Image (cartoon, rainbow, N blue to C red; front, side, top):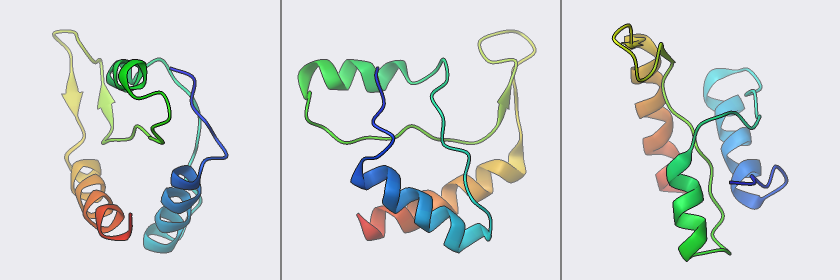
Length: 84
């Protein structure tokens, strides 16, 4: 998946994050988001982002989810869906 860092959705989501949490988001491409690549095969013009709560040790017996970041993610997701 080749992200589009200057897309309208990245702009909107970045502005909303800063508005809600009073800090600039870190926007970067990382080794994640396999699902996004699969969607883009079928819908190449789709504008998308991938984000979520903090997970440590993903896909291992040590996998852990940071609960406070889940609450933050959920509030952000709800507001982003309202604005899209």
